[in-house]
Image (cartoon, rainbow, N blue to C red; front, side):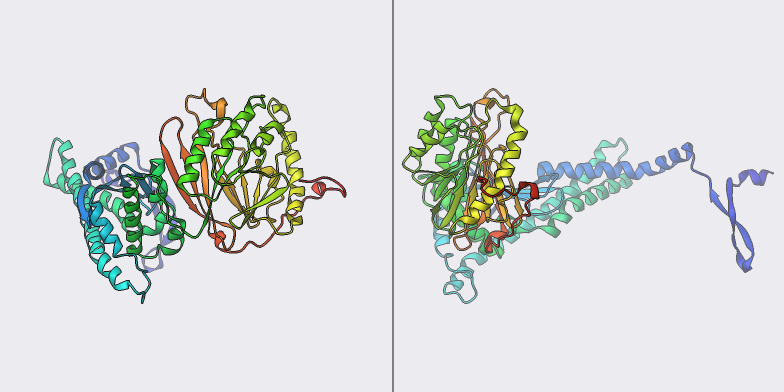
Length: 535
């Protein structure tokens, strides 16, 4: 009896073959009791708590102490790293701003800040690196001689910084033993192991997935006048970002241009083989929206300004006076009526010498053919009829598609205020530009790229009373002169009033190929009857 009491309780589950082919009962342990779980937790505690403390210590050490100053060529750069939710890298060049991109996977963010630059030495260095980076090029020897030492310095600095992060993580883990009243060697080793594991989790994915070419689609934050210089040109992003050396040349040239811009912030940008167009929308009577558009048109050296409507708000008699701002631009100003623009506003826009009001008509700018259709509604004070207006515009979109097809030369870009007016024109035209919804957006449907701009007037007077008004938005679109399609777009947001500014670049890969029409199937109930008016 005493022997049986010492045996663990078992549950019969059946019979299984035993030695010699005999059947023996198969037993399974009973479910662990609450006391058993508590005992298990007590046994795990000596490992779990030091490992957790070591991991936290490593994260804190890396986030607060991972700092190092290095010298690369003519620049002194401060390198930093910290724990983050998403992997990214940021190059900051005060006072101009910073350029960032998602360069890797993992919970670690890198930052490099240019603290000091020998501008004269930088200019001399870049003079020797202007030759083509193509094997056999006439100046490849000069390029190798110039960039070889810089590449070596950069790689050595990066390697040293990674080792510093690893050492800090391990040291932070070991230091975590200080939180325990009893600091034994065993507990110290376990804390160090926790710090080591956390460091591997931070650094491992970043080192395995780091991709410098992620800067093809950068985000810029900083002062408006320096955005074009730091973000670089589109052709560099599309065609030249192939190697670390070429990336170093690009960044160096852009920094050189940016620092030189201190004396002359506007400056002239190098031609990049694209046609740049500024897309604005929904100014809603806000003069600051025109100020922003004027600066962007100048800074990005655009060939035209495209306004997809809603310059007005309520249709009051005084509103058309704001249209006089159109004459400030030194480039063609293409305009399509929005649902907050009345006939007086349209006439006021057309009165400007540089304005081209499009309503079932087209125009050509730098070889790009634009075709515009006015919004058929005027909606202020008619909120109860919104669904009816939306259905009307979707019906009219079939006629818009027909109007595109009737043009002697197919338009490259269709301009509308509300995207519903282009619903069934997609597949007939390569690009649609629209506004109306006060937010950025893009999609490709049946080969047609749609680009929606936000509100350049920050929502207008209706949002002035808001505690946190929306940003003033616009976008610069880069068209390929060969395909007449956009290859990239810079989304620009500015907080008004104030100077918080950001640019986010998106590459549009389909823009490098010619557009092939692929019309949407029109539902039978939307097919216009003979003689019906469309567009």
